[in-house]
Each structure stands twice: as structure tokens, then as C-alpha cells.
Amino acid sequence: MPNFKYRAYDAEGKIVESTILAKDEDDVARQLDELNLVPVEVNKVESKAHPAKLKMHVKDDAVLLFTKQLYTMLKAGIPILLALQTVKEQTKNENFKHIIEVIYRDIEQGSKFSDALQQFPKVFSHIYINAIKIGEVSGTLEESLQYMHQYMEKDLQIRNDVKKAFRYPMFVVIGIIGAFFVFVTTVIPNFIPMFQNTGHALPLPTRILLGIYTLMTQYGLITSLVLIAITVGLVYYFKTPKGKMWLDETLLKLPIVGQFLQKVIIARFARLFYTMNRTGVNITESLKIIQKSLGNAVYNKEIEKVSENIIKGESIADSLRKSRYFPELLVDMVSIGEKSGSLDDMLLSVSNYFEEEVNEMVENMSSLIEPIITVVLGGMILLLALALFLPMWEMMNIIK
Image 1 (cartoon, rainbow, N blue to C red):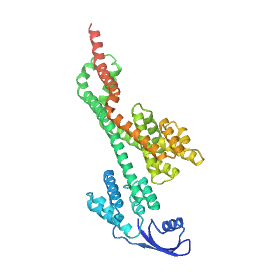
Image 2: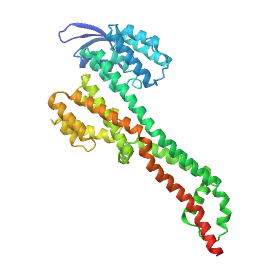
Image 3: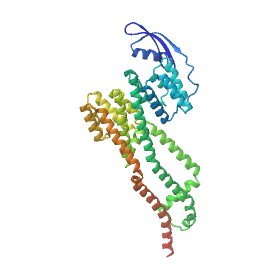
Image 4: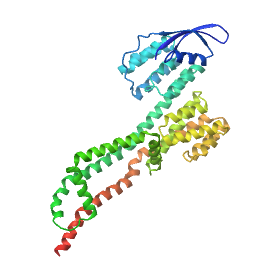
């Protein structure tokens, strides 16, 4: 995104000159209009700082460290350009160094910090950029960076907890499926001649296993192509609004998994709401930002309804209470916060509570899902046992 140098009349009729970051001249005119400035001259500033190609992927922990370092130096009174230069020298990731260099040059040429960050939406989230914008306007940039660091640190911990929670069941499921296919392809073939010589109709479990064996051996290529096509189709469907809504709603209804996901989402919701409130973002704008950040279509729809009710004049607590997806604890704490003027403190308390709940569920996840795994494993063993022994019992009865 290039810089544009402009000359414009302000509300008092005085000429002001500055630099602004924009997509094109039309975008410059729009931004100046929002600032109540009448443009006289606009010229594009060619920047030599932008590398020809920049990878837009930077790890979250790198951005977290960047935010912490920048906040610490700004709080110590170091100018932002010197702080960015220092952070860049300490950054090990070469790609991130280039990104910081671009930000540095844009600010040096007159751009605002938030505008410079806006060029890298895959590195700096919508939440991050909005918090910085509010900090710049209100003169509390250091506090905005501090709150963003706290939020990112907790959010990164929650996401790591989610990965940790699902890692064990995924390995177990993969192991069960692998063992099943190994059994079908190595053990079943040894019994096929004996089953076929009985001359009687085989039991259903045996026919199922023989069918799977046939699909894997004689029609392996076709089966693989069909499975790939189904997978691609499902992935495409789940990316559509209707498919994402169905998937998210189904996941929330699952035993254990649904409860875990709800706690994760509520913890993130409360933490986001707290962070946006502390950085000065108004309530309706905060809800719009949260809506884009939770990643769950069901809660996105519910938050949209909450926002509409607040615009109509309802309190936050009353709007949340109308949805069955927000727990009573959250609603009650928000209600207390609204009445006592301590909404931030209440949101922080709710966030901390549900984050602890998430941590506890992660620690106990193996014991929570053991009954389910036992049932699945028992069902698979029962199917294999019936598939092998039912034909043998029939043969023994025939011999008798």
C-alpha cells in the first residue's frame, strides 16, 4: 500500500500538509473527507523500502514478542522509530525483519503506525490494528500494546490448549482405524477360502469385512478417488456459510467436545470484549470485531443478534440472556458490571474463570474421552470377532 503526500484545507481554512497511507487517490479523498479536510494536491510517494516479495506468514509468538518489546520501549520513552529499529535488529525471522522495515519506512515518511500495520492483515489482526488506531487517537498507544500483548498471550495459550486436547483422541482414532485396516488386509484373506467353501450365506459382519477387503484390493484406485472426491466435496461444503453453520452447530452438540468448545469460545469472547473495552473501542464496534475473530458461525450469528438488540436500546446483559449459547455466569457478571460501572473487571473475571475451566478439561481430557474410546474400540473388536467366529460356528453345526 503506497504513501500519498497531500496538501488540504482544514475546517478553519488553513493549509495542512502531511502523508497518508492509502490504496489509491480515491481512498485518499475518502480518508481526508473523514478528517474534514478538503484536498488541494495529492501526490504518490514512491517508497524504496518495500521488498518485491514478502511472505505474509509470521508465527504468532513472533508477533507476541514484537508487541511486548515495542510496548516496553515506548513505555520507557523511546521514540517509535528507534523502538522499531531496535526490535528489527533483535528479530531472528528474516521475513518479519523485512515487514518491520516496511513499517519503519512508512512511519518515517509520515504514515500512522496503524496504517503501516494495515498492509499486513495476515500478520496483524483486525483486532490488533483497531486497538492501535484507538491508542493513537487517545494518546494511549503504550496501554493498547500492553492490552494486546495480554490478549495475544492468553489467546495463544487457549489455542495451544485446544491442539493439546484434540491431539490424544486424534492419535487414538488414527491408531484404531490403522489397526482395523491392517486386520482386514492381513487376517481376513487367510479365512476367505474357508468362508467361501461353506456354501451358505455368510453373516452380515463377515460380509461387511469381505466387502471392505474387496474395495481395498480389487477396487483400490476407484475407492481412493471416491474418498478423495468426498473429502474435497465436504471441505468445499464446510467452507460455505450453510456448511460452516451446520458443522459448527453439530460440534457444539457433541458430548464433551461441544462442552469444551463452548468454554473455549466464551473464554475468548470475554477476553476479546475486555481487551476492546479497555482500549477504548465502543461496544457495537467491539462486537463486530469479536464476530470476525471467534471463528464459529453459530456464535457469530448470536453476537450479531446481541449487537442489534443493543442498538435498539437493550443492555448488554439482557441481549446476551436471550441467547442459549451464553452461560448464566457470563450474563450475571456482565449485568453486575453494567450496574456497578465495572464491566471490564467482570469480563476479565469471566475470562479467567473459563480459561481455568479449559485448562482443567485439557488436563482431564484423556480420562473424559476414555469411555467413548472404550465403546468404539469394543464395537470394532465385537465386529471383527463376529465376522470370524459366526461362520465357524455355522461350519461346526453343519459338521455335527
